[in-house]
Length: 471
Image: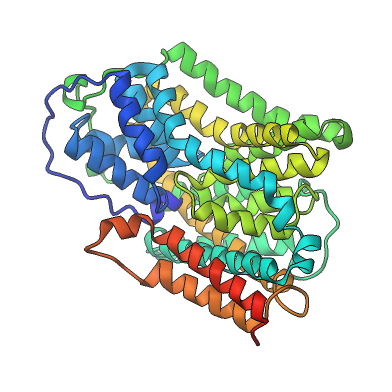
């Protein structure tokens, strides 16, 4: 629901756009640039799409763009990523969707893969302990990562928890998750999977709660579908049969991602275990990049696939990259693959498997749902459940904030870690101020690169702190 946290996408006046001919070259020209400049998180990505493809280029009407965004929000996966695939699909079918989506993702994915391959050189506890300046850099990046999650949690709470029942639901989900994870109370011996069902269970519970509690939607919330000429939608990708097959395939792989790891030996099927972990995570997440973090942490760290210091450092770096936060999967896969096999090839393979595992469900679902778009958007079931899904996602993120904040303080500060607690706290507060309170209302370009600048500044501050051992 990080997309839901900042839905202040400015809508232009509703007009019927003149029919615009959009070819593959047009899709490539615009999305290849966006792939390198789309900073600021999913809400900023959606705003960039709207400004470019609705207002400036007139590819579709504002109403239809908003409806398409709502469809993406009703499905698991990263909404802005699904939008990037859907926009190309509406103009040139499946091939156009693959072109637009891949061009939007690949810069961040490549950079995170490279960083993951080298993480063993700079983000492991053994190396960190030998290099004070490097320890400070990682500590600064980690503190910045927690501050960014805190900012997202506040934004989510303000947007998704305006009503009393949503506040209660979010608090309930947060407390339940913290209780069952129990990482802050005592060490827990587990493989990271035996309580994984708590995440989808809480999300489903949230949707069911508001569906039953709030009752039918007002009649004014139902809108008819515009014609293809009015909407600017020229393709829906696959036909209904192909779309249904994709949806079924996502479900089958999801079931297999639980069954196969339970009957196979991890030591012999590490790659399958990685792919399964990311696939089931990508299938059950309605919360987008920030809400996926607790699931990824509990898959990767307790199993020993990556060290906690690597996880937090990669998280902070992912915030500084263009494109979706889900590209964090490429970093984790590369780090896990290299740690397990100590070869670049295995690291790259791990990055590809984890990246496909996390993105695959959401992307396949948008291709599967588009053929049924007309019927789907007139169904009020998802509309009634969506407030509860959002509130439950807020609860998961708040729990993640508590867990991650405690983890950073324990692992990245003296006497247990590289930098003083005072320095870590100050860096975290600076990062929070930089991403949450500092605004550039009249400088939209600065807003797009605000998060990367904050992360770089905090990394430098951590480096200085580690170098001089500030107290």
